[in-house]
Length: 600
Image (cartoon, rainbow, N blue to C red):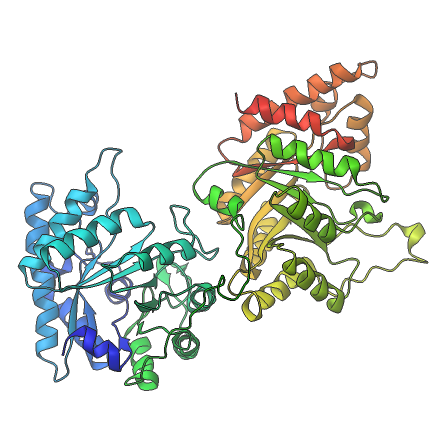
């Protein structure tokens, strides 16, 4: 029976992790999993046998990191890496086949090829991919598993080469994305799966590695899965942590298997495990799902249902994931019915090529036009991506849910979740703060709406970051909780000095996330003194205030504001993922000048 015939009748259970399981068993020894094909073949053979005993029907050869770049980096055989790779690959295929031959079940052997690290700009990784493919074909392998890739460019060339040499080969392509749904190259899971689905030469596609089973379930739900491909899902067992120098993954066999059933219900045909999984995980999958017939994949063509699919859904996140700086500008909606200056500012900023407008939600607890309704107007009239702020202060749980639902119906896909400024003491007799949520709980609430309702196009959440005040470890701890609750990026309080920059740098070293650094130009000596002395949470050092004089003209003060802002942008270049401009007194033209000067 071919693997294609098998998949028509039953889901296919693969093996679990090789590298992390090998490290777990033999931690501290001077050996890596791929090296052991030659130095300790009995270890690799026994791991293959363990997975087979637990029900795996597809073994991946122990060759994921077997490439010239890695061999050179590890110093495994500096004299002749090509010859070493040839010997090692042959040994890996032989060990997998030996384990399969000793089993009474039919076991499929897949050639495992992972990404080749790019050593330098002109590194010929395509040539090495072809060499690896040719070596596997020479060994008679006809199943190829190209896994943990971050973009389609190398994949397309590899698939073409395989098909040219072995037209009837089975080719499974798997991509790795982070918890925000983007690969290391900045491509979304949706785009990667769509492009793989459009390539006729591919038999199957899916996701593996980098994320745990819950995140993978969320993304699988969101994806428009190609109906003519086999779909795979091989998540990690969780997220690693270090204990006494040893990388440990959570022990969550039952939870993993339970969540995997929900993944299967989305039309997935191939399941197994990646980093952190062990034979116990595969055994539990086998006990629950072996022999189960695949569910027909859901057709999720949004256009066929008449639903408009946004073309500017997550441009800011995608741009940051590519390592490009983004620019967001905050506009305050008006106090009254006159939208003129607000709309003129939005049109002006769009012409300046900014990436996103953020809209405050009644800052300082002073009532302004609703942030979500204002955002909807900008999306419709100005056609620019918008992030409305959503505070915990003014709405109860019922109102927040209805606000989000209404915003979603009007194409709002990005929200900045903030606690909200407290109500002034003088107002508390007549105005009450609600606070059914804090910011983290509100993020968790929105995340549950994503999983329940918005799984095709989830809401992307940002969090507020006050880098001043508390210690760096305390701030980082709260940031991590927000990331776990679903935050994809953070907007900081205004930064004015080296201390603020150093704090952002330390926070980025502790928390893996994207940070837009706040820049709020000070437009006069009076403005600088007010912000320094009367705005809690914002630190303006004395040396910045001294750059202004009480007798300055408006023009002189604005020139100083521009100089200070450009100095900050240059200093923040290495640490910031982008810049978050707060507009003083609706002076959008000042922000426009700063943006133009920063691009020179």
